[in-house]
Length: 403
Image (cartoon, rainbow, N blue to C red; front, side):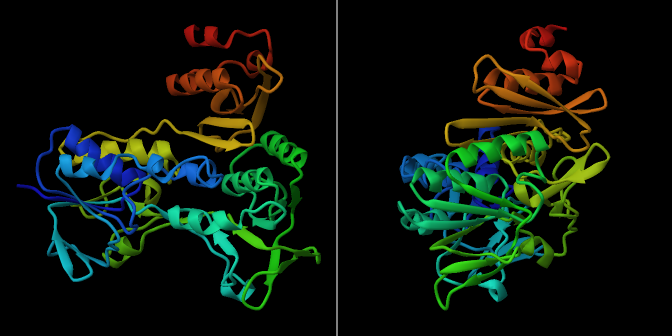
């Protein structure tokens, strides 16, 4: 009977093995994870879990009994060392796991500061996994001073948690504005004002020259020549796809593990899904770092491992929680040249609609679930209402779905 092995026990790995069993696959199924905890949600780590509002067990997708009941061999604290494609084996320590089909759901790893600028000092943290959150939580104390390096969503979420814990927060972003890589200036302005209202000192166009301290961080020298004191540093400068196993196995890489539209790598017996995989999309190749992609692509790969032969057509969505604001994003804004601003039904509701010419690409909705829901459905249906119609507060958004 065919044996399937999945390396990487995050959102994509869990989704893949659960889908295989749901589809009726009853052969040997192994899930290998490097962490000691069973598969768990990552987004709450930098939000509810870090604030102490979510217990560890609530992070888990399923209790460990689920894997026993579904005959999924779950191997935790197990880092895969090597893939032998010729023998079709995965080597983990002194064990070898045979496979007929292999899926790589290895995710991504946070980019870290080099040791030459003080990245190895105690008190310097990244935020990606459970161990990172557990290491950072004790340092998030009222009155403490924290420097956040990077003005993307991870950095901003960490800033929000720190400010809510009563810390003195400074955030530096080397680019001219926060969220520059992922959002329009209008969205950047919204979140800059939000954080300023909570006392966060955001410095844009300013990078880190070096951290100060002998063994533990005590301060930072910035590229504008200023020096600040700090007790804690949180580094949020992006992630890199975890491709070392694939590279060692000789698989084709292209901003991640290169897969075809069905999720198959350059080896027909090896598949990839989630943050680690890049795939063809609208004439180019992209890699999505999101819960949506991890679930949807992994479940599609599970179907294709069983012969479905389906191409992946992502329906991207993302979210971020900061203070009392819930940001929901639908679509991909790549290539936009215009933004329509719509004020919602309440003072707190606002949405930014991205257009390339007349085509609606994406929506950023702040405390406006209706705009998010309608925008998502319009994008998925290929409908593009006029930008002026969207910006008009008299427009009934739901009526646009019937047009």
